[in-house]
Amino acid sequence: MARKIAAGNWKMNGTGAALAELDSLTQDPVPDGVDVLICPPAPLISRAAAVAGAVKIGAQDCHAKSSGAHTGDISADMLRDAGASYVILGHSERRSDHAETDAQVCAKTQAAVDAGLIAVVCIGETLDERNAGQTLEIVCGQLAASLPDTATSATCVVAYEPIWAIGTGKVPTLEQISEVHDALRAALVERFGDDGLQFSLLYGGSVKASNAVDIFGVPNVDGALVGGASLKAADFSPIIAALAAA
Ligand code: 13P
Image 1 (cartoon, rainbow, N blue to C red):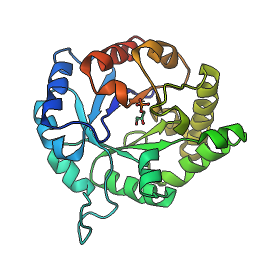
Image 2 (cartoon, rainbow, N blue to C red):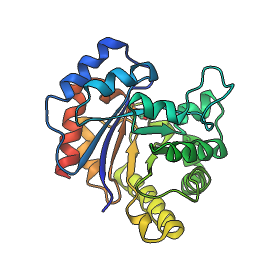
Image 3 (cartoon, rainbow, N blue to C red):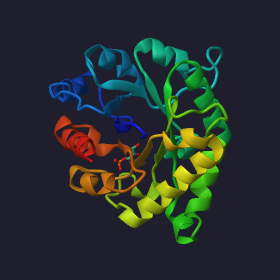
């Protein structure tokens, strides 16, 4: 069984005051069998890690090199040293804002794993690609090219985030989510054998308390990568509870 993960991606939101939300999240025990992860902006990682308790802390990107002349970038080693245990890689906002390619995401994933971080590798289609019937081809292609051969279920998590569902309030149907997650599972098993069954497959894109129960009922959905609804503990807690109950 893949482990269940409720992951919050705060994106470029929050200063120190936002740590009150993390503090509030830690008031409830983390349910058995669920990893709860918050990925705040990089400047908050060490302060977040200091108050996170059983909640895991992650970053939102890392550089593929471990050090060097890369002004403004942050290495996986630095993130780990700051208290992160996970890092989101290849988010569609990084792919679009910074023109990140699958090959770069793959190199970053290897760097993250080498540094002892768990990589949450994001993939997802645009609405045009979905409308053109290319969804499975696109996401399976991204999966193949973004995960290094060294990936294992212990070191990498896959997040399917249809770009048209991110921050829009639009969510694919449960059948659409199921079709993609089944295809990703099959691709992971084909490439990694039995370990492919153990990779956690997260769904992301407009997940809220009101749709989480249904989404977590879809086979091969092992959790969620949540944006907006992870910013407030009151919104994120019911999503964690829904995953624990799934
Ligand atoms: P929303 O939950 O705000 O749609 O964001 C999803 C996402 O991009 C998480 O990485």
